[in-house]
Length: 102
Image (cartoon, rainbow, N blue to C red; front, side, top):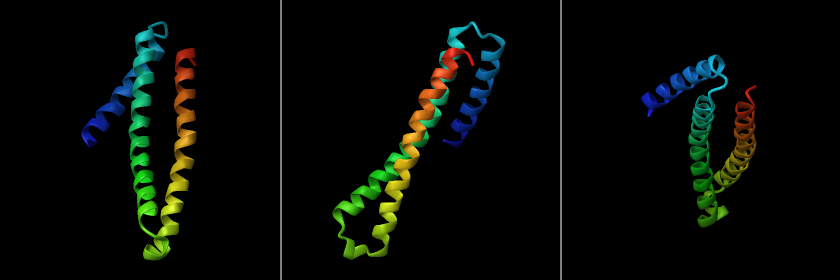
């Protein structure tokens, strides 16, 4: 996974260079946009798993059983949702920016 991430970051840098050198080539725009979205989606997928696990734990285990950890799990859910919403917004804005050539 680390190797793929390293390669993906290198590819994004190369695509950014190609995009600035050849702004009329729509393929570079599309590849760069999809690469950036893919990288961000990987992070979001991990956050969704964390939120899902916390929701399952708070759903099936009573508050009295885990005590203090119950509030921590609720905090994790809240923070996760606060991370996901702006990140989705950023993905859409990056896509618009790349498509507009800025």
